[in-house]
Image 1 (tube, rainbow, N blue to C red):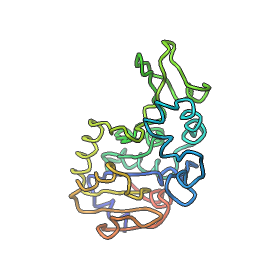
Image 2: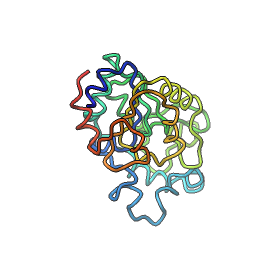
Image 3: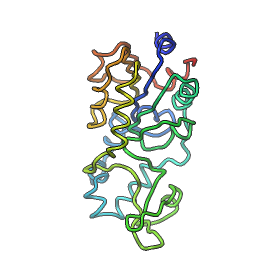
Image 4: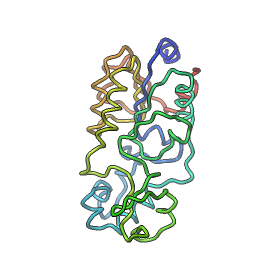
Length: 234
């Protein structure tokens, strides 16, 4: 069924969440064994907020290095399939809530990272760029040669999404004839609200658990994203 939809589509957009990267060994957030259900003295949602970053910077980076960075992770079958689909002219954009950079690593070119990327880090004082390796190899609060704090280019709680990225993602979704939504519970806003702009023919949902949009979809698959996408031919 999905193969048939793909073959008849001319403009596919992919919208993905944490479930896309779990097959690369990166844990998700909201499942029963996800990050947000682990026991910490301070809830992860609070640690990953801008207030906590500003007031407890060293503790933020302690958690960030330990739980948010996965330097050994490699693109899985889902990431690779999407890169093939773009190369074949079927897929026009990937819109992702993930910050791991695996879509780009797989070869996808048009990727809208709604929540930023751990691969990009910048000095809050002078703006100098630093790769993720600098954060990994630093201790305490990573600092620029100018003395400024180096902040990951990720959207923390209490921070707004990048307007340009959002506008481009919404435009791509609105022009698509098929939207494949995968690996997301569709409960994180404003990102999840973007699929409201889809007015095309086929809405495909691939997720381990049910989502609020299942009843509106053309096709629902409660399976692993990589296993489903990896079988597709483009």
